[in-house]
Length: 314
Image (cartoon, rainbow, N blue to C red):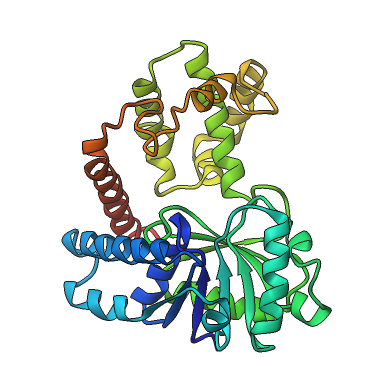
């Protein structure tokens, strides 16, 4: 049974993953070689737990115990030496992940399960430096951002891991309130990110064509397809609409839609101009420096409200 957790990397994803486990009673070591990053991560976890309490999603009394379950460390051996489950949330570089898993193989007990939060790197490549016994105990566990709020975790079942071990990991995620999707084939982006990129490609194309202003395109998505998607999957939507209708509409529309194989030129220009979104103060919309914290809090509040509502539809 999985009882102890280590999370490697205290950045955007890592701190949220650690928070999700700690909130549900699991002791977590949060590793990062940068002590300043660990300090910032703990501050962010505290702020996010406070917001969950403000929104009535958790009781304020659980915050301090949850924070106490997270131990921050800058030494990798200390972080993982007695852990049952280790998930890495480090930069998306194959060489880095290969070397990290080889290190972990020498530092962790034989029973430890390894996991990567990647959605873009193949599991076979990341585990290339491991022996056969350890290859049977490594998988992809892809979280969605923000990790402490978004319910989805994609779990790989690519044939390297026994079914009973997979079931143990799946039970772990369900114990912390996550919805798991079993991914049977190692394709770039897995499932959720591929669907998201399909939507994003058309959204960016519509902006580039001048079909509508960014705010109206987002409104069309939020109060149209995404309104249903909050509770209903695409295949169910199609069944309710009629597959004959969906087939006819697809024949009419798909030939007129974007089928590009690389990032939209508009998106690339934004990046070249340093307009990266909230992190730079401007993307498709402005984010004044003195308002970013409040904007981020409003963003999280909306997701928390949706998380609460979604529990009625599980």
